[in-house]
Length: 189
Image 1: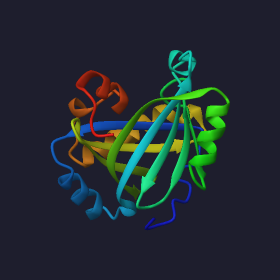
Image 2: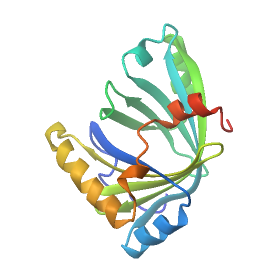
Image 3: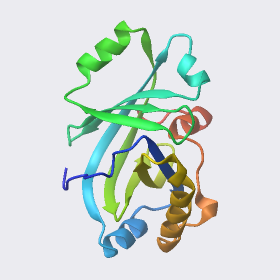
Image 4: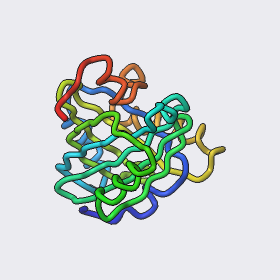
């Protein structure tokens, strides 16, 4: 970790926009020229997706994800949904006991996803620069909040910020990486 995340990852709701790009470097240069601060650089993140054996979470538009980050050593337990904006995450000391507990409760691994990720903070936003073998490069601009009523305002603010980075609304990718993998084949895992 290069800086303190402060309140960047606090909140029950996450509003994000993901953009597919050809290259990460032009956007990285722009955010750095704006004074963005690096949070984590050069991480390889492995997301382990979990569901109950009957697929109940997926059918309810929910996800349980254990995220392992190296070399930063962070481990996150992430609960997304129902819906695209609901997101709760917590840091863990390690994945082993949490995975053991979830398995004891009937959860099974339903897939893995590996990505190279850098995270920056610029104002209220956290910006991720992702590269996934087999899928390409992506920029995600996001904010966390406890105020569901503020989400439409955040949508506008993120669109304006993205425009300032030279990102075009036509580059927006609405599918999750997991959905893209299902459609395009499995990247490294």
